[in-house]
Length: 365
Image 1 (cartoon, rainbow, N blue to C red):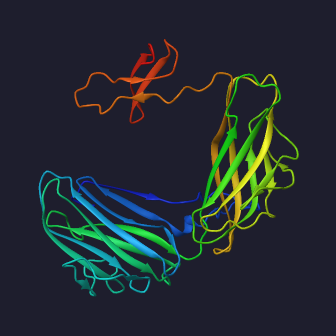
Image 2: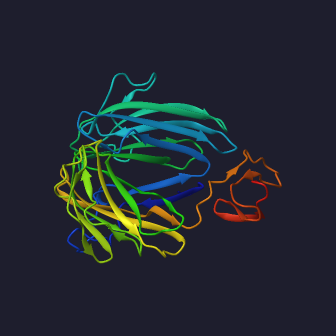
Image 3: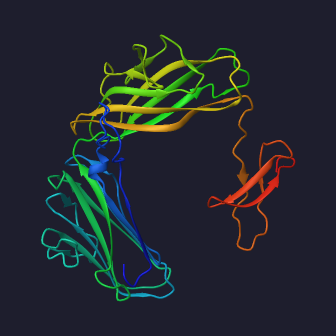
């Protein structure tokens, strides 16, 4: 933004080179890539955020918007106004508006005033360090472009060039599944493998508004681990045996089409065993998971994946996470903490990912 200290970036879901369930490369691996291209800008001398209580909703669901702001500059913002812009056909405002907040049907200063209504607050002068918070309650209606709604918060002052600074919040208003994956391995540490069994457990949580129908789960277990035949169990309300996986490149493909749909708020679990042969070299052995699920409301098959999960450590066990004494005050010349590593272990100190010092452990510190 000309005349202000502002950084902008764009965030997209889904890689355009990703493959579909049938192996074609068309990028349609999830719905978010098409629903959620969000330009996000940051004004470095002004905190101004708009948050919404949920990214997915059904008609009739509550949507709570929170506008927060703080003057981070060393000079005041004068003539300050904050507006919230919305389309009344997509959402309806609940109850009375906050005191002294008239509804502005002209929506002057909004991105699309011909189609938006607005609520406007006159904050007058916002001194350095002064902050504010505004909460608004709406009900989702739906019917917007792509069955979604976008709310806009706009900050203007005499110190900002027109049209001020804006941010937005996006919610899909329709049945949409949102998978959330996690996987563990038990035991996670094996001192000396000798055909030792490891049980893998995958959970798929549905954080969306519509059901997800299981199709396939592809798991890549580390070499030289081997799948233990007849050990696969899967289910939503309880576990039942399903068939052994087939080989798919270097992965194991589990056909989970017989498992019930995962309802909103529900969880599917898949477990199986693998064998760690004797002579496996010391090291850390992670797994990779990719899921294929039918999004019933969306009407397409979507995928999600997680990598470097369910680690099995062979040989030496991991130490506990070290702790650092805080706060670290400005001007400090040393950082103290504790560790479970043996005496003489090299410790690297990183701040914001940048190594700033090295030391060695002594007596647990």
